Image (cartoon, rainbow over all chains, first blue to last red; front, top):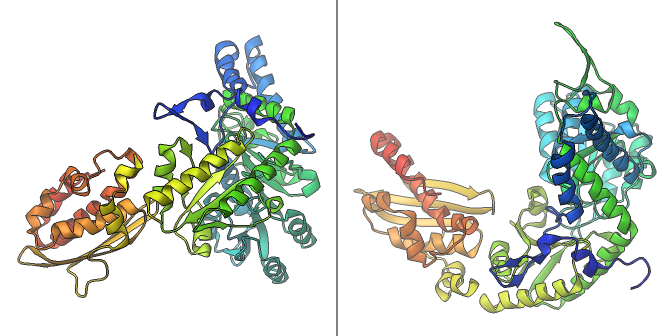
Length: 414
Length: 142
């Protein structure tokens, strides 16, 4: 094995689901990692262990088991803070998912700071979760949602960005770090630097980047970062919102209820400090603890090795796909400029038909608009097929993908 | 398996759809889409003396949804409205020869029938509200 490379074959042993068969005989080839990733046994066991041995509500009870439970929950917060290099642990808020993190910002930061006539700048690359919350805010406040354009190669038009900033109306930028359709990695540093020169805060949707590459919030200097545990080996139902301390402190709560208070009186409430101010009600304790185990797993492999593995797989896949007649790949052609997410179409085969044929051979790919209809409109397609990779995927699996693409050509006679 | 789904007749209707296009002075025009897949179907009907005088569809989407719509137009052309009212999802699946579809793809096959049923409900809504309600009640095709 070369230095810095991970061994996907031995990693596969840690993922029980990869041993299952599809239709009784086919190996399960899972290429839908941009939607959610599989879970290693350590994560699965940690959840069962929590309910077996530690189950109790966190933060207030004084008995031993509850203290253990609280400690385990808060330990994940510390792990997350270290993982993204947050300056302070209390800058990490647990939500349900990336979508909830962005909605929290739209509600708590947006309502306080955005007014009629202001512009919120997003891009044509965004997932619906970074479009719709801003449209909701626009409807409420009369602000406008504006889009940075994507060029034909899947890169952002940055000239367009600097022009927008000159206008002076932009009050917030919310931007994906990595496209969930094209894989495009957005040059955030330039964008954030230029935004900060004009005192515009920047939200980063890291749902696709944080699981696949080292993301350092202090290095990026982003104001907020949202991502989901389930796209990085963790359980569903856990999301993260990172925010700079002073910004989080200036915001009003998202939801009211237990745990987010210091004192409650008949006519007013003193809110708790961050991060608890934003974690009303009993959180998803078991899955947060499971997420901590997922982070350990990733750290153990190393994010640099993961990124390198995905660059290798993506280069190999792009090369192999280029050999398939009538196949069109969308997005950047250089693997270094993109994550392990490849969208494509082949001849007049609709992506749903292709996904059905793939399924016959045990291959799980995604088909459809990928919750990015604005980008689909930009690409002038109604849907694409998408293969997305993670630590356990191998070149053999890409070879099988190519074989079945040719099989689909035979079935559709193209 | 896919070879059974994508038979010659499905591919033929997908690539050479029958009765595709708009219909001038349609009595009923209905649009619907399948948010899961993004399949889209518009159905246009010209109705005289309770009979389908003409039918056309527009749409985009997968081979199953588009072939199914094309074959449905052939199925209802010139037919009495009672025939459409009585159409069941099994009739459609049998007509296109796909009785083994999984839960995700069955929606593709049945989108055009859903649109057609909504068309019937709209057509009767003013003329005969009781019939409209009845069709509504019987049209739970998904």
